[in-house]
Image 1: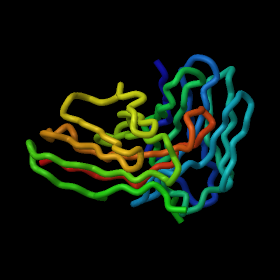
Image 2: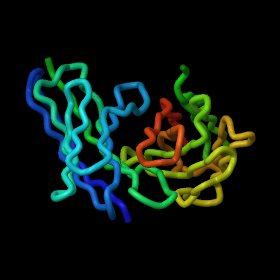
Image 3: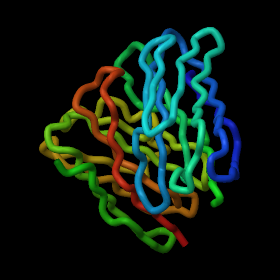
Image 4: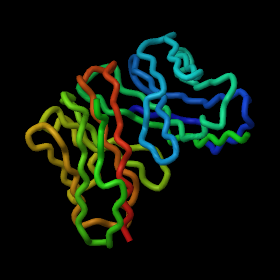
Length: 114
Length: 115
């Protein structure tokens, strides 16, 4: 079946540091890949997505590139801010069939210190 | 446009009691999903409605869980009787269409605590 393996946290960084959160997946075909973020006290928000190989999703300074050859979708940001403190979830939906549910990774708690 | 809303935001109940969670999807979204995150683990799929029909309920853990979506608008998820292991955060999401490019928009979740 489909699965997502995500870098375990928690991750603590200083403001303006570089961020990488690793995400790899197992799925047949070409799934769609997503990063969702959950800020304290809020629900899940879509951060970015990519629907085909070599696509780059980007939003709010975050980027992730769909790498089919390494089955990865690592999240990066060049300079994090305190406001980026949140839980980040990598997820996928299958490329075919009627099932459209998201398969999530375990989440990575990010804390950015001033 | 209003987002996905869920009620209540928190619920604390005793083991053996019944709890009903409600989700109101974004207006016009035919697809509605339930997920839950237990004990800080990964978020797991429970079921998927297309309008009022259950498209996929393969993630429902057992028959103590009953989901409905009468009229194809809001949905309820009932847990009866609740057990300790049901504690967690229950998320609802909706999307406009079923294709893989249709984004699922999530509600804030209901935190359920079973004592």
